[in-house]
Image (cartoon, rainbow, N blue to C red; front, side, top):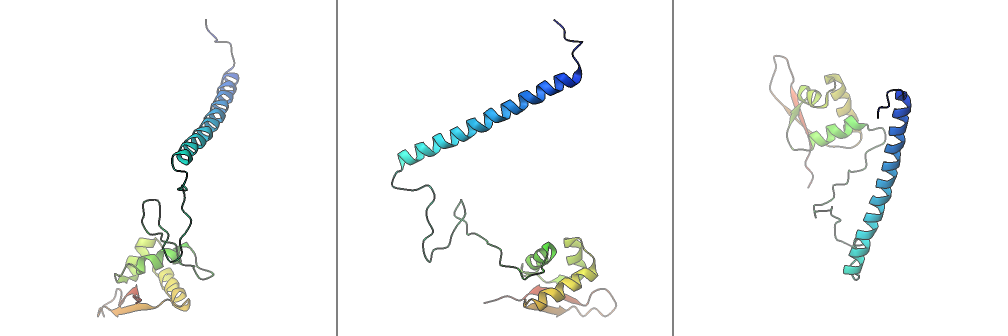
Length: 147
């Protein structure tokens, strides 16, 4: 039996409809399966909740026990590049402006502007002179270590 005279758009519509039905069934089955596993877990460990409530003076950890690294609240007006620059400078390594510009994919002039904004926001920068008097960059930067 051949179906050469069925228009292609009707076949595509039928396939799309069947795909949507399958997705709905899979979503429903996945939800039922998650609920079934949660019920088994609750039945096996009734005295231990799956998620433990936070304990006072105990740091929260991720799924595997690693400490949560919540980002510090950023000052108003900071963008993603500010955040990336602060993360790079907080690594403890001194960086030159051209290197930072390359890592963050921005112009050198932008790095100088971001550094000014970071300083105005209260971040302490360590600046070292490279001794280079023949051009290029003269200073290298990192965030001052606290504590």
